[in-house]
Structure formats: structure tokens, C-alpha cells
Length: 433
Image 1: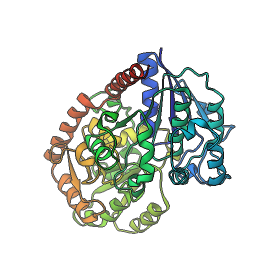
Image 2: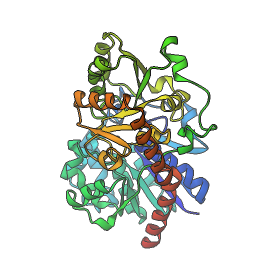
Image 3: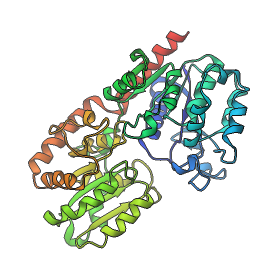
Image 4: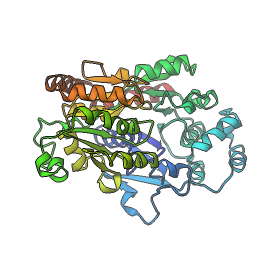
């Protein structure tokens, strides 16, 4: 039995690809490969709570999330009321930290991202006798990465980071921050493009980078599998009675500028000029900017928008979400910040065509004109043009969706990802013995 320590930035009920990746790896490796995995994370739910006390957090009295799918989750409070100077002073009395040779400027920048988990660090420093075989953390550049390196150095065990590199975000290209990635024994990249960037721009040795893509619970979304989806219908419950045959455009993700949600809203007036019988369904956490833009779009004639947030859903496999993917005519996420894009896999699993941005890792994930289309990032007119093209061409939608579904079933299930992760762990554990 292998004993693994997971140090994710957040964990369920937080919803993003990085959190779900760690959750599914923990569940599958425990079940199928007899791993024992300890999960230590922050009590933050949204990104704001990683560094701001006004963000959403899990309170100590909320016992429901101490265990997720039969796995214990240890959550530690984010420390907000402590200065960077005080933190650096604490770190510098730890020999395992000093051995990392990280610059003060690097740590100060990481601390701005959060979350500083002083109690978790103190706890691990007292647990040097824990016989972990390996430590795995995510995602860059957050402070839990530093904790993983300190503890790995302390107990002399290999450390892995899955950084989920967001190419278009300036902080991901800051050389001071990137210095921390060189300290890990292994990095797991989601795409060849991410590995290429880490090698060429970050000067990381290619042998220290393993490519393992993201995955999906294929059977949950597969339309042809009668057991995968309930009889629940989004159209029956949220569309007007005479609108059941209207087209459905779906977005699922963080509703911000980076993910392209604002650009989608701005594309709606252009789309409605050509196609009036259409609904737009948005699923995911909202932002102030999204809500402000949404209020403008609501004033348009024929603007039909269904907007779900995590507050009115029950998690990754909420029946409204599954029904939305099942009933969608196309999936649209013109993001510039994704290291991969799990929701593309979900849409393909349901046999749907996808549209992403021609930026970052997306052109590697989406094969243009084979299983999806690409648009210029933050170009509402280009987005509208591609959406109109797909909505007016049922044969093309079916062709792109079918190609994506076949690709996912053969290469991108969580079972395949877990198997490759298991082999990677074993190789690194043997090398470090």
C-alpha cells in the first residue's frame, strides 16, 4: 500500500478543474490501486477566500464536508491577519524551508495569491514521522505549493506539482514565481503545449515534466447510455411551453472575463439578429462584472438566459447540469486561461460540438474543424459568427460532436488518467528510494 499526501489549494464543494482532478484521483487511486491518501487543504470555497476574509469559507461547524465520497478531508483555516514579514520570519527558522533557497520576493508574491495556512504548516512540522511515499500538490502559484516543498524536504520524499499553467495570465509568466516550480521532483502538465512552455520559457528540464491530460466521467454524460442521465429535462423546467424546440447554447465555468463568459454575453445581440429562437444557459460561480453585463443583456428583446450558480446546484453531477449537456446544441467556452478545459470533455462525452478560443492550450485540446471550432478571444462578433454557423448546420454539429465523443472515450476518461498517474507515482517512488 502506498501512502500519499495531497495538498490541493481547495477541495469540493469548490468547483473548478483543479479541485475535481484531485478529488477523482484520490477516489480512484484509493479504490482501484489500494492507496491511502491524506487530503489537507484550505477552508476556502471561492477564490476570494484564499486571500480575503470576506470570501466564502467552510465554517468549523459544517461537518458535512469533513468527508467527501468516503474520503476524509482535513481543512485548515486561512490565516488573514498576519503580515508577510511575520510569515517570512516564521519560515526562516525552518531548516527545510531554507534548503529550498527561495527568494523573499518569490514568497511575498506567492503570499499575495494565498492561502497562508499557518496551522497546516505547524501541524506537518510536528508530523515528521508520517511515512508518506510521495507528496502531490496543485496548483501554481499558491502557497500550498510551498508547504508541499517544505514538508517533502523535511521527510526526504518526492514532491509533485500539477501547476495547471494559465498561459495568458501575467502572474504565470513571472520568473520569480516560476522559480518555485524548479524545486519539485516532477511536474505534471496537461498538454504538450504546457510542457513546451515550461521547458522553453521556464527553463525546466524536460525529463522533470510528465504529460497526463485531464479526464471526464464519460458514462455520466454519454447520451447513448440510458443509465447515465435521469429523465430530468432542463427545457421542460425552464423553457416556456412553446419554446421546447429552441436551440440551447451552454457555458459552464467561472463567469468572468478570463473564461470568456463576458464575451459570450456581448455576442448575444449579434446572434439574436440572425437566430431568435435560442436560449443561453450559464452554469458556474458568478462575478460582479458578469452580473452587470447580464443586467444589460436581459433588457434585449428575445434574450432568453438561464443562469445557475453553485448555490442552486448539488455539485459536479447535478441533474440540471447533466440535463444541460444532454440537451445543448453546442458548448461554448472561449476562455484564454484554461490549462485544459474539463468541460470540453463533458460536452464531447454527450456528443456535442464545442467552441473554444484560439489561445493557450485550447488549440491542442480542440482539433479545429474536426471536433470543434476556435474563435478569437474576446471577440464577440467572431463568437457570434461561429455560433450562428453551427446552429444553422445540424450535420456539422453532429460530425464535430461525434468526433469529440470518440476521442474522449478512447483517451480522456478519469480511469485512464488515474492509471497513468499510478504508473507515474510508482516510477518516482522507486527512483527516490
